[in-house]
Length: 217
Image (tube, rainbow, N blue to C red; front, side, top):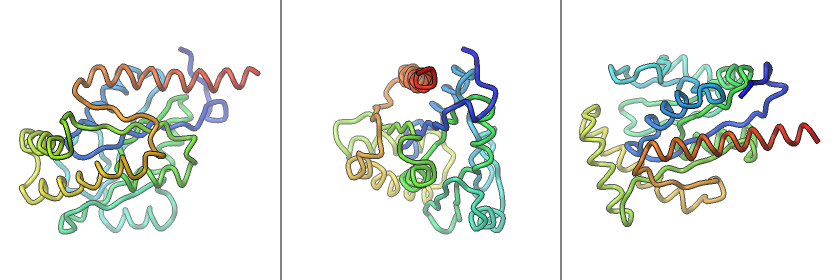
């Protein structure tokens, strides 16, 4: 598929993957960007979290002071702060990084939670956000949380305090899917990452195709 050469000829869509820690947002986002590199880009997450050997190219690490300056000067498209507060974990996306992805003729895929998703919708409008909620497998909330807890411990990246904080956040994230169903186009259970990637690539291709058909009218 040929890519438009400028953002003026390209829809300012973004694909938001929302879900609790351990559900597989990063894995799916990276796989999607690799499988559909011609039409999907993955801008970096700006964060104050402590760097990890597992981070790869996902994050751009800044100090808390630098992050707050970006926030106060309106350079962040969306931002959030996650618990535990002792870890001072701010996350966000720079508007200029999204603009750069659109200029390449690609749809940015962003990793979100409830506040980040609402921030993107507030800035760009609901119709600009192709929003997918990712759920862990499990028959009910307790089973889903058990799956997330197992995954978080299995990846062996976080302290027990951090894991507890992530599980508390996960409880709110799962409730958010029902409370704000209007913010989601799709809810998908991540029990097969390859299948999820294929489904999402199809949705992005369809969104781009619809935009181009509208231009041709």
